[in-house]
Length: 633
Image (cartoon, rainbow, N blue to C red):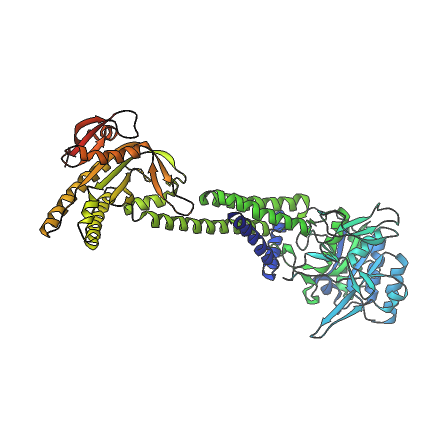
């Protein structure tokens, strides 16, 4: 049963945690914590191979024309960028509707002339209660007729509206449409092809990879992108908005041969740009003005403003060129780690003290968080930020509850087992240190007291049972009160015999003296009872008391079914024999103590040497004393 419990509890922790991890609430918590990894790591150095030309607020001020800009402007931008040596030009600006035949034709012809331009389209989805309607919004007809390159701009967001992943492609029916970043990288690899690969081993870091292949028969110059879903990869952001170098659209447009709409702004700004501003670089063209609504939340939102869509594409392309891919462990490997955490920490926590496990839990949570952060920062490995600390914390809390329930049960058991046999103060001390109860028994110094009624069988035969029981109950109650008063432990009743222990299970100062005080007070209380019984016309009975001290085997010496805290051994037997030989000596108080007890109390009691006797069970004689009183009373 215990084995099953120790399997069931950590298994429950594991299953409960996995169910929690699947909830939207937990997903959003994990996503928010993922943002902190970027904020803590900070910005990373970029290669300057990717730059942006942005339609910013200054562009609108300089051009003073409405949006969308004339296609002739875009054609001149293509001309100027190619004159400046741009390797590739990517428009993150939709041009899906014709403006005028001349401008549309000029744009397409200019792009065809250089062959290094990618235009933008998108997949538009509309959902209603019955179905999801999907349509592909393509660039203008002039671009499509000339079979120019175009790709979609769709950027997926997580459930909290943050962009952490990049769409590699999207399917619409049987057709596959690649995104700007994917097509850009493919065109850089001449004769490119795209491949999906499946994992070939259990603990593959990437459940699926997307390969942009350089040639048909080799992966040389190819780019292998680790995927995190069917068609997305993590974006390893290099910084917040504004990390990539950008130039104003109007500055690139304003060359010496272009007449700005406002003569006051005709500054020939393009001619003043750095010589190598665009040489051999990938140039993305997009908007950064708020009115065009091309802004997104990214993990760096906590440090700066939202990021324009064009810079998200820039981050992805830069990441692929540098090979700075973020990877994650397979879900199966994570599942195995979660299971190992639940079982491992559960078994560790149940054997340690709660105050120790608290410190370990705090330390582990800090260590795990640091490990996750360092693996992210230096190995680009994405691990769940909160899952492992939660498993540790949850396991600790469950073991704490288990410990509380177990301790409460032990305390209840101890209280029920001892409150009728020990003074309340001793029971409370025992509850503070339940380990003082030795299950199975251990050798311990203690004092035992036996008290027995003389000729009680004859007494019972000459009295009615009800009278006998009432008188016995009165006697035993008074004797137990005396024992408990002096921090003794009532071991048991054997008929009319009383057995009491002193110094166990809680150690008391001079247990032998406590036993002697009890013996003398039992005598005084019985004498008072004699006077009371005589006044009521009742018969009286006598008792004999024996006290012995020494090593005894003490503990739970009962069966598996019944708890029995008691003492056994030669010294216990000697105490019983001393009580019995009271009949052979005419003593004052009918109390006999052994030489072992006398050695411990001789400075505190008045005792007289009686004899040296060899009792049954002993191979040598024992000196015995009659206990007469206390030296200070």
